[in-house]
Image (cartoon, rainbow over all chains, first blue to last red; front, side, top):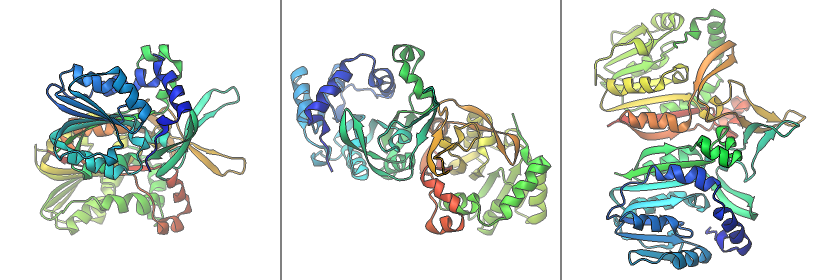
Length: 245
Length: 245
């Protein structure tokens, strides 16, 4: 099932409000770690899946990419991206990756930041990415960490009577599939997969795991956003880099 | 620090009592999954690290291995193994792997079942294994799952007032290192490492991840040992197969 939550206007407005704040989890935790794993972009053909407002696609252009395609299912997102970034080597398209036709072996680098947990058929997704990648091509993606995604969309902190965090609770880790979460609006759908499912799916599709990051915030990041202290108890995100072999 | 808990006689007796029961986590959950990832053993040189009472080493001989060395730090374990299994192609040695000298590239298959979480220097361990393995050689090991190992050795179930399990609690996942656990006796030492540390250490040592299993019990296993139902909430073990490249 293809979910287009970013075209829910209430969601989109609230999402934008978070993203314009400098001190959010993306800017302080996910993006800095994601960036450490980006391959050389010079003369590369790049596909950014779930490109949102186009920032990363535009960054790839600034780093000398030959061509960058940013796709997103959301009309709001693609509209925004097209307004903000115009370049002859940059294309934005409103399409679900499942519906996109990509010539085999045509892409050097597939990137995706915090989008794959919205996609129901992970196996199909990765198979299609692997087919699209050229030999030695790189896939880099971030996703909600399985420890967090396992919970049915709830932030499951166990606290004492004063509200101090004692534990982070994992619910039904082995029970993969749909989770509905109330995040910004009700009933945002996302999919939980175990660590082994995520990694084995890559391997079985001909992608070799190169590096895994479960981001920990820097001291500076924690000063800017104290709630990041929670990250030491459990990881929010998982970042994986894999190579087509 | 090399821990030799199995030569604590109280621990060893209680451990043996668990192992002789047919319905334990090893027999119903860890071993069946571990066995699915064993490579062909015919004419192979095998090293089993933490061989315990020698069952797996002897199994490898029965499958046509050329030579099998079982090592264990425990005098009790090695004494038991030597009594139980005698074969010209089978050697048992009481030694910590850190202290063992293995010719480079001399081993086809390194196995280890639920021993690596006792070893303090994981990086050194994996580096040494990688050096000992021949090209295309296989490492197969099981270890306490990081979700479980993160807790300071406690079974951290959050229950309701009737004692029903609500959540499994993860404590300080990102805080790697020593955990002391009261399991059979007080102060058993083991080491928690995150999923990314475990997998990146393999990759950085020249081992390619081939498959990861977070075991789920079969229905039959749950009938034999109802507490295995907990496994659906969180995984106890992690099993990894990797190839020297």
